[in-house]
Length: 271
Length: 315
Image (cartoon, chains in turn yellow, blue):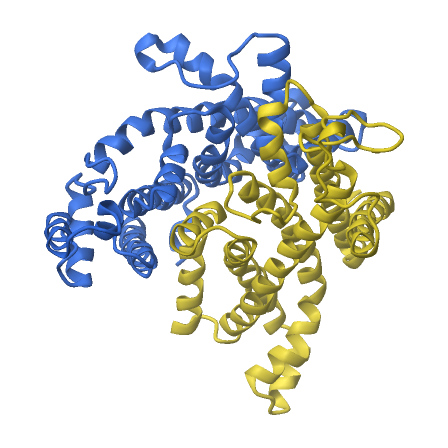
């Protein structure tokens, strides 16, 4: 299953690379309109063709990767920064009112699909990339809280934690020094998966106009623009779609691969 | 069982109450006064005040919250700020598109996922399994609205089997209605089918490793008989939970897919209301969606406990 890991890593780094390179170089200015060259199919000059304003699609895809990655990455960061401490606290005080409160709070957030959170936020504060980040980030919190709590609970039963308690360490110190490092692998894997879900969610939100606003390029908005032109110029819809699929596929393969790599027990169990 | 059901019912009511509080107060912090917005910037202050009174905006926040919740319990969702019609009527009209769409998609997703998952589990590690698993990897990576656009391109624009958008209406007959929901339902079902197939496969693989499966073979059942009689039936339990969860995602996903196909469902209602700042509609539709999610999860929990008595003692 090493193949998955490498394929996923290659696809993911390709997208990250495209986003990074776009800061210093793109084939064309991604926002420059050039009406005489509009709606070209892929060719030697415009590698992936041009849109209805004559903008270079390859350049837009590169810059759009920045938006997708930034939104999804920060959303994972929010989810981890809030969810992991909550999960650790819930596990450390298992069965207490704190645990109950955190878990019921999680259930509550789970009842709001990320799209619904985004709709609420947008209805109040207006659309924008920042609000998309917050919406996806909030959705990520219970995911990380649950997975951290679940893993931490089984760790609390282990001898080395008991030893730490006997040594007089507080629950908070044990959580930070012994539990957290031992759930880190799991968090990395889940982080990769939430990252790929974030890319999909960002695309969907931008598509319906709740995400990044013009002139910020985004794959979802490129698809929204392409919709009325899809019969005339299918490549307008094909290219951003394939970009999203390859990115998400890459991240998912990377996540699966990392899980197998980081947890040798699964390698045996799976074959 | 009754004890468990009552416990879950109490937590259901608490969840709904907290969710309604969250939704109400998030919408409340929205800047701008709906009455002012409806009448425009140049409206006379007393006209605005009169409209505020008519819309019930002139009472304290907590009283408005109680009015809103009390109204919803009796089927009165308030009056739309822009259309001046009862929100309940608007929602009821749209629900007849969104709900059938979600159910249709769930049916398709199940019909694809069950055979695919069972097939993959039965051929674990062989070419058929690898192919199905590869397909599901791709399935979860495809954004459903993009897939919807591709379906339109192929089946509506090129082949002309379906219309590219719009809804025929149920008054034209069941077939016409289903026909215009077919492409949206397929688009909505695809990623869910991929997830469901994976769950079905791994659940069945867990069961196939159980001792009673060996016993079934030992008493003379063929592999196929054992798989269907003892494997699939037991594997269905966790799959049911996922189906319940997916229903929530399908209702939310329908909001996006409706945009692709210009379907007059809850999704379009929400987006129109957001741009018109018709917040009472947004508030009520969001509450309805969250209500659906919470209630479906409650029902799944109950069904689960009915099937598996071990769960009743937990929590």
